Picture 1 (cartoon, rainbow, N blue to C red):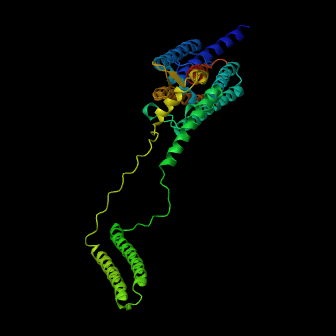
Picture 2: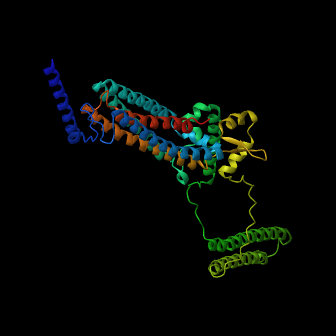
Picture 3: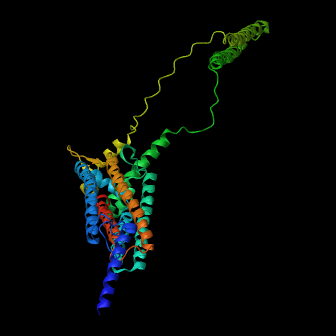
Length: 429
């Protein structure tokens, strides 16, 4: 019995000395940590001390993250208090379905992260790796959804600050139509009237394309007028003189039956000769007028002033036209627009169309907060990949699961921040 006891004591001393040597060589434990705790760093006396120190460190880091995001939430609160109608207007441009999908994805990833910690505590190595893989997949899904959402906003001009230039009006957005169908229909009818007015104005301003008119030089028209008048006067004078001569011959014939016809014929021929001379003179005068007309055109009388055109309806600016149409709205028609935030009543009585003039402020906060949160998601993906590599080497178990626990705490904070961002940005009421 004594020999067996001495032999056991020697084995214990050998194991102790071997443990001390192994601690200094392999693990670097200066305080003689036993072989069963090779993961304990040299500046810790026990695994529990190392775990508690790590837990305190990760919580201090999370507090600094909370303080950082708290400043952003304060900025959000201030700007929303100053411009509530703008924030309400602009949030319709966000895709609530995309935000809800990302919320579900992150909640699922938090579940798998906590499950990975529990599996490590139970020593279930395969389940640890599966849960880490699912967590990483959820993180990549979140970033993929954000990429689609950001691409849509850049395409539609939903950019921060002064770059905000939406390609669609708010009543054309599906989220607004679902929440305020009556207001969307009313604004659609109003915009249809505006487009009809623009189309009518464009038709009135168009110049008809017909066949070109034949233009006659003014000089030719002035020269031709005296010639035509001279020819008409000569023909009328010839006809009148011929009729007078015939009447005179008929009256003298009964009184001079026995006389020679020579005097009567001479008397009848004299007017004819005078008429012929008058016609020749008229023709000569007309020819002379035609030749002289280009050199000295006859004065043309000034045209009579055209009648004053009827007063046309003035072409109104779009904003003026909309203001006039809004004045015509009845209380029943204006009520859904007021509830939807599209209209607001001015101090002097008439309604005013609310437009997102400062919507760039909303999207500046949106892109900064969601973008910063996305950076934290990317960092979390990198840390989870590191945890997966270490889990593949079977580093975690019931006595050592601190790194997975700390990573899960960080991931829970990322999830919690998004749970606040989603209602504040996507579900504004």
